[in-house]
Length: 87
Image 1 (cartoon, rainbow, N blue to C red):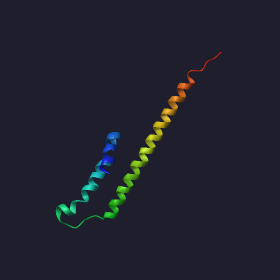
Image 2: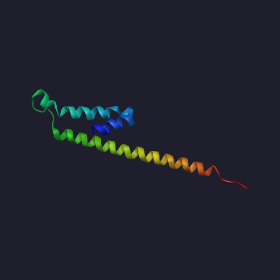
Image 3: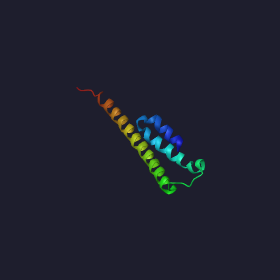
Image 4: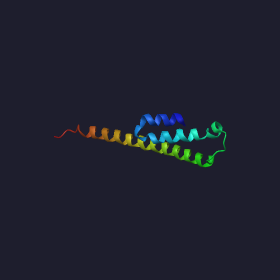
């Protein structure tokens, strides 16, 4: 998940908060081992948050890919209409 988040940071640097949330959630998993205490959060809830972030990343990827494909189609369409011959 960290690799996906790091790639997302390079693709969309303005959405740095996604990467920060993923890193924080991953670090929270180690808190009980580092400090020798009980977990102060529910792992199920954290897993659902990570799953939600993953779905958001997938949705955003396909949305961006679709917009780029539509942009290419509009550019190709406008180029083909510029070469009409009028008699």
